[in-house]
Amino acid sequence: MCVFLTTDRLVLRAFTADDADLLVALDGDPEVMRYLTGGRPTSRETIVARTLPRLLHDHPCTGTRGYWAAETRPRGETGGAFLGWFEFRPLDDHDASVVELGYRLNRTAWGRGYATEGSLALIDKGFTDLGVERVTANTMTVNAGSRRVMEKAGLSLVRRFTEDWPEPIPGSEHGEVEYALTRAEWRRGPARGE
Image (cartoon, rainbow, N blue to C red; front, side, top):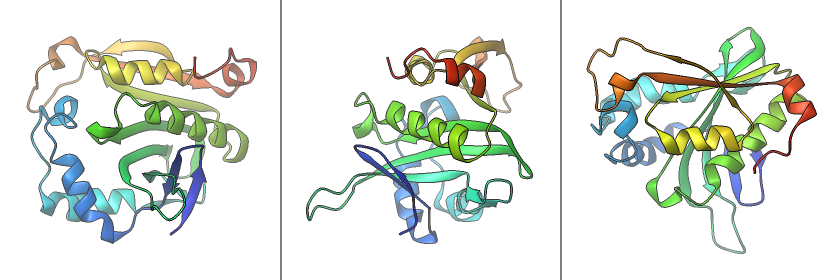
């Protein structure tokens, strides 16, 4: 297992082709997909043909992947449970200065601080080890849970915008929001994770 980083409670590791079933289950939960597809599941064929190749892609500018499987940190003889994934992906394959932060976690992981914990760890690693200058994150305006994670991770609202949705879903009429954090803002803090 190729571990990218660990936190107090999480292990973020590289995806493998063997993770297809985990991804099918994750994307098969209507609540997990609510703000992405309106609750429609992602087919196994799409997971194998489109999702996995994206998750397995190495970015030359960072020498790392841009997506990481999230598991609970093993305790004793108990192995880690799959929670979902985190995205920390350069927007340009050849320039690590701007990365997109994202996360998709199983419902059982919601409300337990995992999204904030993983986001903070990735942001710290990006600014200290990967040459990142700006972290950005987007979500639907109505996705209050995801917006709260962004704020707890130190990102601030930058703008509201609308996009053309090929198939509008409930809430898309309210548009999207973009949050961001620069290295300079991160350095001067306030304390993150509050």
